[in-house]
Image (cartoon, rainbow, N blue to C red):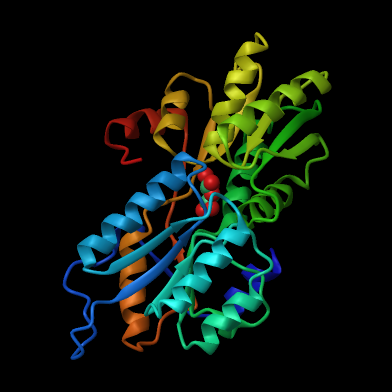
Length: 326
Ligand code: GZL
């Protein structure tokens, strides 16, 4: 388990709530002041279907909650997020919330927010700062658990096989919490089985284009690929294009296990192209608005709020498709 996850466990106050159960609604003016709650939000970017759904959820929930949202898209660049946070400090927002594109390099700017007495909430991804006073809460998934779920499925899928299983891995953005933790969770789940060999592993930066490009390289360099483990569906969908262009059948010649559970991946699953999908729920908006209102009101909030999420076989994905929100 990563140090960060262990720390948050030790920090106690682990709260697992249903993502969809945010209360939302109702004005969010400070009790008595009439001042509209202003939140500065720095988003990673618009790199994937998951991110698009996450942004939509946050924007819609802010509107519903009567929160004024100052929203910034960092185009997956840490320096843009740091600039946005400094701008929110200048604007004296009530609360800063952000999804850190990578785990490291945040202490200086978060100290500036602390010195300006502006509370910070992490959503979706975490930071590896040792100074826990730099943010009040982290709302998001347990990526180590997601990686473990993917690995556990693979162990079951190949329980009766003794031959080597050659795995290629499309990693998320280098240095990001989901990439680090999904990699370690998967490795932990499969380390007891020497037949599982990760023969190639490279970042596809969570995008379809890069996922396709790296999968093309894997197909050229690897004589035998049995499984693709993709850290998100967008990279898996890009890889599917590469696999089909190479004249192979995704889901059959090369089994695919992925993470996120977005609609396009469920469509691919219904076509037999992805074999298992570990859900990572992007619908954090209502919970985030509840959280920022409590933080602004000075209420005690949990250090760690873990989102509930499941796993999908092709049959389950096909059944879920008609009502899938994202
Ligand atoms: C996970 C999130 C990841 C998704 C990707 O919570 O940070 O970033 O898995 C997205 O699709 O790009």
